[in-house]
Length: 427
Image (tube, rainbow, N blue to C red):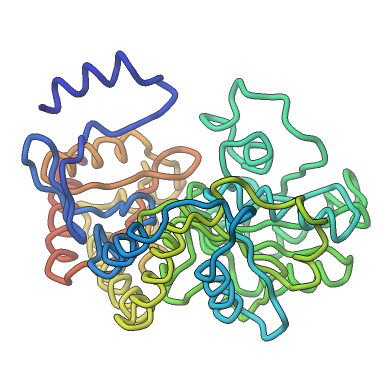
């Protein structure tokens, strides 16, 4: 097998709607990946924030092997198992707030979001949901309705479920701060939907696909107060931000905000499919028996992996590691931005090890430069570094290295990034 032969087979067998990089994985270990041609990469994508604990962490592999020797599937609805209950107990304790909580498990982040909305509607008896421009909440019909980006996620796939509304997300670099975002909500309630009809507001504490914009802490606090005023539930979508990625177990902890429901996935399973909704017990109990769940929800294999993930996060102090790795990245990127040859770096931002920088044509106008971002990703890939873009204009580079990455590899990856950017801008 070679990249060339696999690329040809891929094109003939897989639909073009599934976008991919031309990197065909053969093996991986922690923050390194080797393709079928034997080329080594430093992985600054981590499966899009799934591998916070790195590729093939020994604790996770051991836990999965041990579970596979016992049973791989019973369906929790048919024959439940203690490990599911124990993981629910752990997440109930780890999520913000000291109130009683309950947790349900599904397989994907989109499922978690859909179930959170179902639960919110069942509890409040209200139909409407408010999301934010630039949001990404999945590729299911409701997930697409909630997602605040048309191309490529929504284009050609409508109509979408009704009673979903969007308001501006606070992007301080582009002049939308807390006041402007709150004004957008006020205008929505005045012109489009009575807040008494709104079941929930769903927000990513740091937008992922939307551009790695952290929501200002005062905005999250104001959003919590607004929800309380109108009897609206606050859903924190922590699918990309959760499980130590931002330097806290969950990103909303930075703001001291307690949501009513939290969705999580990605880093929770350490590379195995698992997602969850955790929320206030009385809210989680609003659905009738049989209204929640799924055949593969809470797979014994995924549950076993998640127990190991939580152990690794605690024992290897991955929240502290996220802060250290993120500081290394931001310091280096900010130094690059100060150099005249890198005037294309308009902004460096992030929480913990969820770091991004925005590429612009002009720092004064802040006009996005998606073409430069594309060249940078291609140059970095040639040199052995996996990068991802994000943002509505594709001009933002996001860095999502595993939290277990050795510091020497962080530096090596940043060296490659700097060299690749120099080539991409032509200096």
